Image (cartoon, rainbow, N blue to C red; front, side):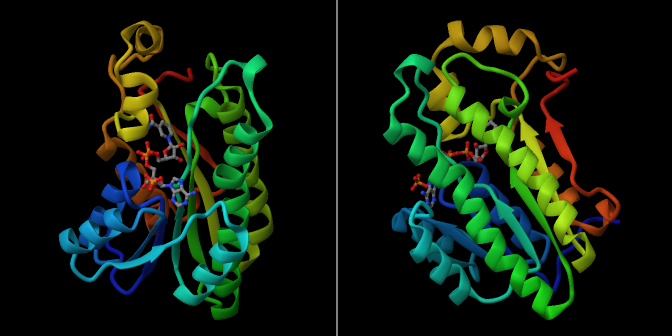
Amino acid sequence: TSIQFNGKKALVTGAGKGLGRDLVKVLAKCGAEVCALSRTRADLDSLKEEVPGVRTVCVDISDWKATRKAVQEAGHFDLLINNAAVSFVLPFLEVTEENLSMHLDVNLKAMFNISQVVAKSMIDKGTGGSIVNVSSVASHCALLDHSVYCSIKAAVDMLTKCMCLELGKYKIRVNSVNPTVILTPMGQRVWGDDPVKSKPLLDRIPTGRFAEIEDVTGVILFLLSDKAAMVNGHNMSVDGGFSI
Ligand code: NDP
């Protein structure tokens, strides 16, 4: 039987573009009541036109207080996908405090912040839930000029396990997906236009290609669903075999 989320409320962060935007569409198709959170209002407005019934929250998740308030006001969620992240790569020796702080704020601290609010509501309601954190192969494979991104995605993998450990007793499952390059706006910017950079990575992928967005949304749907009822604390590679 196919995956259905009728009666479930889902929150997707970073829903304006790329993976998050498509995820909103597939979750809605599966019957979920979806709330799309992102920081560019125009993206959310156009998403609303494409997916009637979607709720939107416009906030910059690097702002801890504003985000906490916005997510609290958005109400209860049964499903959370911590997808929003940034990637502005620099050689290790050129990393600035500003670059590091920005990545920490968006890619890690916001995950703590939003997950705390959503998990507390799941606990109060007593009906459990499922959380998927979007990590990357970069969490366990060093990539040139990605020291900030890689180290913070490694933290995302460990946060996933720690959340699993502490939230299991409330019937909340927490997993991560760890994709290879997906040619979203982020993927295009970092990898898409430079075969010199992308070829060595592609050559290490047994399936011989980068990920399509639907390769990743499919795995996220599975992890969110009851079909994955015993999959918990897992960092699931979606990388065509890159990590073997
Ligand atoms: P995109 O850059 O294409 O889209 C990211 C979305 O997140 C945008 O809508 C963006 O909004 C939003 N966002 C970014 N920062 C903030 C913020 N501070 N507050 C609110 N919203 C924000 O990224 P992808 O879709 O490619 O990435 C999705 C996830 O997948 C990320 O976690 C990424 O690390 C991961 N990933 C991506 C890979 C790839 O190759 N693309 C590979 C492996 C993992 P705006 O445009 O307005 O800033």
